[in-house]
Amino acid sequence: MYQFPIGAIVESFRTDTVSAVKKAAEMGIDGLQMYCTYGEHAPENMTQDARRELLDIVKSNGLVFSAICGDLGMGYGDPEKNPALIEKSKRILELALELETNIVTTHIGVVPSDPNHPRYAVMQKACAELAAFADSMGAHFAIETGPEPSAVLKAFLDTLGSKGVGVNLDPANLVMVAGDDPVAAVHNLKDYIVHTHAKDGIMVRRGNPEYIYGVVHPVPQEFQGVEYFREVPLGQGGVHFETYLPALEEIGYRGFLTIERECGEDPVGDIGIAVEHLRHVMKGA
Image (cartoon, rainbow, N blue to C red):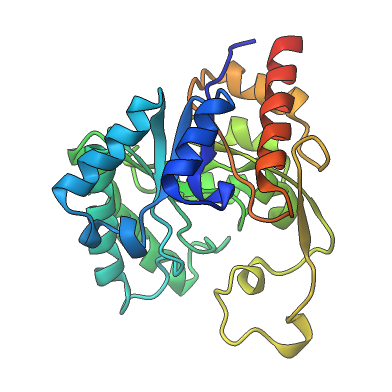
C-alpha cells in the first residue's frame, strides 16, 4: 500500500506550539495542521516576523504544514454574517500560503439535502466566492465532511464548477453524525478530496445534524445535553481503516492522514496509538 504521510493537529497535543512541534517530530510524524482562526495565530495577529518564525520552527524540526484549519465556527449559512467571514477566510488562506501549504480546512455548516432550501443558495454563493479566490491562488478551501451524507455534499460541490473548494474527508464524522460509509464517501468525493483527518468514533444515537452542529438556534430543550456520538482512539470505533485506506489509494489520493484527537485524558498517548495503527494498516495491506 502507498505509505501516506501522517500528520497531526497541533492543538490535539494540548500544549504550547513549540512543544507540540517537537513532540510530533519525536513521534516520527510528517506534518502538522494548525488552527489560525482566533488568538495569536489569527492572520490579523501575526506579523511577518511571527509567520517566518512559526514556519522556521516547523521546518527546522523536519515537518511541514499539511493544512491550516480555518473553521470560524459559524459556517456560511447567514447572508448577513457571510461578508465578514468570507474576508477573514481569505486572509487565512493567504496566511496558509505563507506557511507553505495551499489547503485551509473548514466547516461550512449543514448542506441541505433539498437544493430549494433557502440556505442552499446562501452557502452556494459564499462557497463560489471562496472557490474563485482559491482558484486564483492555486489553493483550496476544504470542506470537512460529517454534517451531511457524502452524496449531498458532492451534489453541492458539483454546482460550483471549481476545485477551489474541495474536501477534507473526516471518516469519523461521517460515521458519528451522518451515519455514512467512509469508503463510499471516498468514491463519491474522489474528485474533490485534498486532505483527510484520521479520527475514529461511534454513533451513540442518531440525531439531527442541524442540532448537533448548532445550525438551529436555540436547540430544543429535549435535544440538549444528549450524547449523539463518541470519539474514540483510532481502531476502536466504526471507521475500518483496513478498507478506508485502500479506497483512498484506489482513487489516487496521495495526501496526508492528519490525526485529530478532540477529547480523552491522554491525547498524546492517543496520537501515538493512531500513528501505530495507521502504520500497521499501511504495512499490512
